[in-house]
Image (cartoon, rainbow, N blue to C red; front, side, top):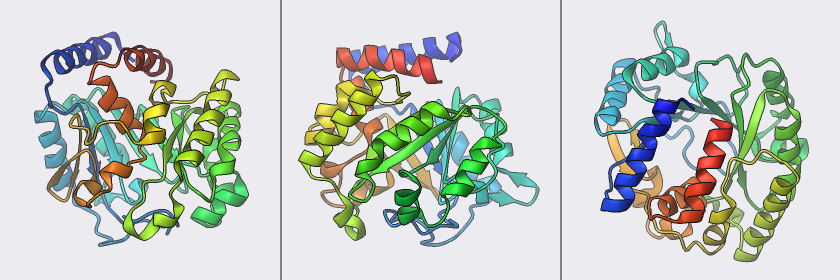
Length: 300
């Protein structure tokens, strides 16, 4: 991370904590809900299958920047499917950088060639070893591994949603993140139980066991892009929600925290690690502050 970016984020954090401000710093633009996969735990793919046009995406990026967002995510659907004429995902990442976003990340399922060195991080969904990943996402594991091997930069971060199918695979994904040269780290989430995927959600006891495994892997040197100080709050869902410092925009609709904000009762069952980490950070949790400094400076 550049020193100028670090100073900017530090000032934002201090202002937010001292004055209890609710301004956003992290924003997500949904490029499309079109996806080439139909994963068992996903509730947002191919609802409309519309690829939003370049001018609309450009306006949404500007809208987020004008609101103070400086960490930008491009999400789908599958982001590498996005194209408008001659414009593709690389053009959006480059434009976001030129617009003034300090960190620009992309989320992908990894089934397309990973040629995007301009992104700060490419968060690639890997949901276990080959057997369990393919059970969730179809026969894609080998394709993903080949694409990682051939990636043009070492800016990949695994993104694993832990659920009842793959809860035994945390060690496998940690080892893969450690051993693959183009992968920097792994970031975990617990499955958030959308109405059509409730059966995949973990119990409190299962979450506690998973956190113990992640902690042990961290102690063994696994590159985990999460904050263990937040684990107790994630296990009990006792972190404050929503996260006002995060916003999502999709087809002109701006939501605080995430697309699921309007689903009754879902916030109370949120499994997103970053939501716990950010809400605790901006409430002034000292352990979280120092752990985030170490983690972000190491992996971004």
